[in-house]
Structures are given as structure tokens and as C-alpha cells.
Image (cartoon, rainbow, N blue to C red; front, side, top):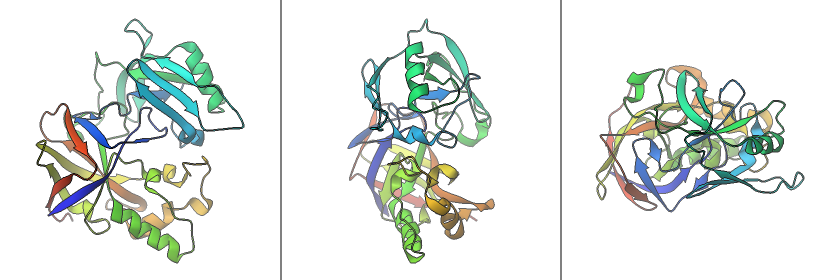
Length: 289
């Protein structure tokens, strides 16, 4: 059995706007360029759309020397902000992502001022780049093994099923509620070819051309970020689709929380392998209890 890749995405800055790709370079830490930057508070703790929904309006265009920041807000009309990769001599901090810790290098102070203004933050924010001289220390190393991501919440890859989105939107339509698109769920890889939510019984996806094999570890428990409209940074009324998704696909271990997509890692050591839209992945299924 095979599925077809219909979407590839990466997110230069954690919890900010994603960028769709025609093809993606895959490594053990994720898609090249994915979540190598993070926004933190003064204590080094990551901030996200949970507390700052305007992060969904923040675009980051990747280049060889850094990123260019733009804010999709015509009322504020901020000029673009050029951000260079920090020098190795830049101030180093320890960042905190849930129970994990990761080293990072701070961006220039003028970047942090721009960011704080753009996001309407009531406290100083800082942009930081993963310090690749070190490594992330996972709070639960047994979960994803040696495959620690840069600044993603959990696994290096989030893999989603297009027909699961279709099933959710069908439920929303029947309740006369607004539909959502895949951006609400911030995937890295989207495929089609399996019934809705059947991905929760997939244990591996293999790509013949490159030799890549993805291990699908566990379902992704979703939070309130899925209720934020990525075009407006406003929360959808009645917390759509949180409750509706919980009703049709709750977390196996937590019936009060919704699941959507699978946390995944690459099997073995992988560098510079390429996936493209339209590529097929071989499916291995093992029904999970």
C-alpha cells in the first residue's frame, strides 16, 4: 500500500508562519531550515501563538546569511527586518521548550525591539538561533531516541493525513461551523491515500527513491493553537475546531484532548535526502490499541 505526498512545509521560526515547499531536504533533525529560530522571553522560555496569536502573521524568508522578517499587518506597516545568523561570539543562552533545554545564540538587539513591537508584546522578546555547537537535551529521551529536533515542540516531523482534515471539515459542515485548512495543524508532511485518522495505525512510511524511512511514534495531542485563524491571528468562535476534533478523534490516552497528525522520526542516520510533492511512500500498518 502506498500514499502520495500532497504537502511539504517548514517553519523557519517556531510558532510563526510556515512556508510550503515543492521539495524538502530531510535530515534527522527535520526538514532543512525547520524551526532553527525561536522567540523567547527574558527567562529564555519559548513563546508561541498560545499567548501571542500575532505570531501567525510573522513571516520569515530564509536566505544564505539569515532570515528576513515581515509582518502581515497593514495597520502597523512595519518595514522588513533583516536578521543575520548570529556570530559564534554572540551572547549565548539556554532556551526552554517544555521540559527540554537547548543552546541558542541571540540576535541583535534592534531585531528584538522590532519583534516586540510587531507582536504587541507587553514584555521584551528575544529572537535566538540554535547553537549547533551544542545539542538539545530532551526531557524524555526514550520517546524519540537520538532524533532531537531543533526547536519543534516534540518530534522532528509532524506527518498529517489529508483525509483526516476532510473528515474534520465534514463534521464542521454538518454543524454549520467554519471549516479549517491544514495550516491550522502546522504539518511538515501531508499525504493522501488513507481513510481519515488511519494514520494512527501507521508504524512506518518508506521512500524508495531516497531510502528514507519514517517511524511514526505517537499521535500529536493538539492545543488551542489550532483555533487561531492563520490569516487574521484571531481565534475562531466557539474554539473551533478543538471540541469538534476531540469528539471525532480524541487522544488515546486523554479523551478530553484532540489528536491530529503523527509525531515522527527518521530511522537511522540521514543527511541530504530529498522528498518531492507527488512522491509515493510505502505504508506499514500495525493496528494500535
